[in-house]
Amino acid sequence: MTVIETIQTRRSVRTYNGEPLQEAHVAQIKQFINQIEAPFGIKARIELISIKTSEKPIRLGTYGWIKGASDYLALVYEEAPFAETGAAYLFEQVLLFCTGLGLGTCWLGGSFSRSDFKKQLTLQPGERLRIVSPVGYAGDKKRFLEKYIVRADKNHASRKPFEELFFNENFENPLTTTAAGIYLKPLEMVRLAPSANNKQEWRVLVKDDMLHFYKKPYIRFDTIDIGIALCHFELTCRELGIAGYYESLTGYPDGEKLEYVTSWIRVNTQDAL
Image 1 (cartoon, rainbow, N blue to C red):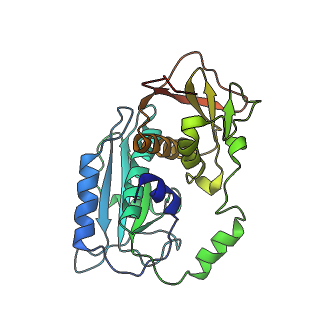
Image 2: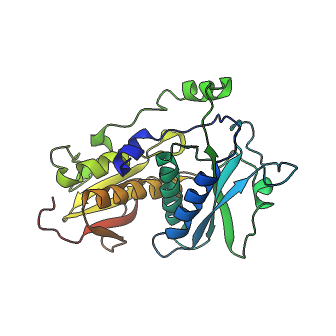
């Protein structure tokens, strides 16, 4: 699958069939993890943990949110400015890769036992275990809890309209799909990015031939969610041959209830917006 197809395909999976990952999938995941680096110069790593690596299965608590998973991905990063955002970017890359392999995943940020997972990891001074995700083969039937979670959030599978998330020149002027030009598809993939409680609390301002990324601060997950959005945007740009890079600039102040995060600068601006 292409990056765009993978983003469009991926869904959170909470119920698994109990089978451990096949050796071929384990090898593919580990190879992919070893060949990618976290962006923005931050230090982060992803560990693949199996609950059936010994005769006695290890205990990994997910508080009933996950059923039947035998393998998990754990995100560890070294604390530093922008580290959480860069680590989330890295983690989403891996989850998208797993989706391309036909595997299920699910972001878990607060509904798992850190003490259980830390027993399976060696954390260095300054490192933090932040996110985990089951990875495996989806079960055939959804449990009652999973059905309830989906029903409880009426907007679970929905996304905010394009014009509510992206703006042209200022935050009073919504960006239309026509005016988005070559960035229409990358921004649409940002719109599809998963976020805590489907908040979608990131905004993009197109100005001065650049795209400026902002976020609405909220407890615990705002820096994670913007990292996922940045990942979707850049991976889609790469796939479409739109060259550029992220850089935090001066002169772009916070908006009303918004915090400036970073800007996308196109390498060749000849046919930019």
